[in-house]
Length: 591
Image (cartoon, rainbow, N blue to C red; front, top):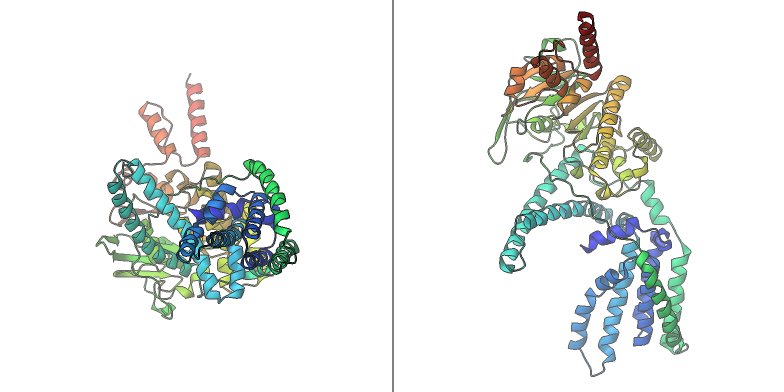
């Protein structure tokens, strides 16, 4: 789509026109359009059109694509011109050239200026609600565009798009658009939930970077626009009537030479594709201005090992029914997290792991049961605890809200009123910790899945929370990034005593992360709680939960089945190495 093409051209372009300040380019575009309005003869307008086409080539934009996009308005201008035709063929040609030239000037502006920079300037010219809406629209558009790509790909792979059956193809595309509409409504709900989790106060804080963009100046584009406007005025008054006749051949030659060089211009890369959301529906969202006193907490059936410790999260026999009448009952054992504890939740798909986290975050209100977070009911009083909690959802695409990586990481600190100096320090530190400083000014929709997950984690860590809540944080990470994340989480726990609750299917990493493990089965029942060693030593419970033991445990079981006395199942590589060395030494001594 054209909007995606513009975004690609603007972000990845490296020409001199791309580097010019956005404010100056907007003024220059206004001056170019003024020249188009002033010009009244075919030759003058053709000269301006050639100049703009030459600038497109200098900007190293795809000339043919840009000219085609700029020609769209000419269709309507042509219809209007012929409806008002007065017998002179120059009249419709002039109107069409005016529309094409003005459109080409806008293509040049949008194709060389990233949308967030344009929105920053618009925010100074129009009410802030307009620029805020544009920022959210910009981010949401690419989420919906990816969803549409997935739908069209599915249709193509399943035979839904067939050239020789156009009516069936049109019907299938109509169904896909209907599905996209439903997904867009669901996406709007989830984006609102993310906004509340990240401290949205009703407006986007702009920060110094947006003010800097809006106040930057560059005299070269403005000077070029002024020269062209003066030439157009002189041509209109007849004082320089030979100007177009002399300029057109020269500029056409420049354009021809530039067109040859345009073969080396930029190409449009394919945007990465990502799986759609798998988050459960959330009919109830958090509500403010309701308070639960800390004295109202009631902890029944709390595990004996937490006695005397500070409880920061507690879920007791919660039942919730979704809009499709699916019921999840998080009963059995109580779910309890104490200060500075590392808790991992495991279970098969559909067992209620995400539902458990959504109740803790106040995004779902239980039909029955108790949910407490830092002494408050999060569904009623999320504002009292939100600065203490960092969140990484399963679909990180829907968690990244801002148009650049820096702005997204800075989103929560800005919303909570931190000074710009403090925001810069927090963002720079977390980007350094996660090794994503090189992504600072990148647009999120051009990042890989692993990079997006790191950015989402950086946004959660920016405020240095007391508790991290993460839904499948290792999904989409390569082995190196996974090791880095494990090391970072353990480092945060050791140095800052950060608690975290995470869900995962990666059972092999659980022993390296967890102090406590909760196992869920289909329907949400919590059937076991304990250390990783205690959980993974119960083969019967693992089978009930449809969970495979860690790979080292399976390896040692296979060795024992082969008749090798290697001892019990290890849970770390070092422990496995020690047992294998001990077995080898015993074997040597026996011989």
